[in-house]
Image (tube, rainbow, N blue to C red; front, side):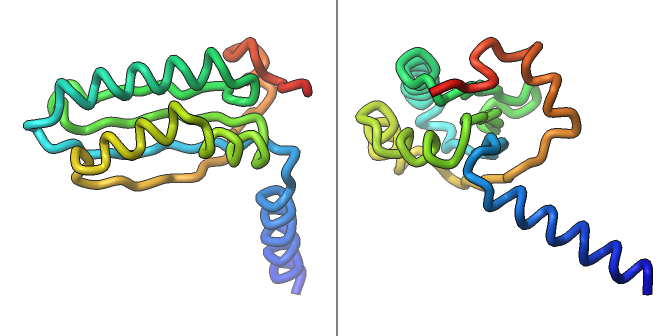
Length: 133
């Protein structure tokens, strides 16, 4: 019985955490790009990620990486101050331009939402965190 109550408690706290708009959104985007678009995609992604971090106070990180053994495979570490800031990001001119201009270039996309093992480390790693309105 104690085990069941513990499991329920963990699930409920996880749900509360994920639904709380004050917590950061942490995500790893996994993308595969068609090889014929690779150089063009890199230019567009570099511009969009730089604009997002520079122009949007609530974008803590959009850090693109690609695999050494397969340069068509990208991972992007995305950190947004909270859900509202993420939703604002989706409506920005630079994000819409990125999304519409790269649509045909993306072979696959998977968005993986994450939790921080130690959220206090974010203060050390990212100067924009914690986000202040």
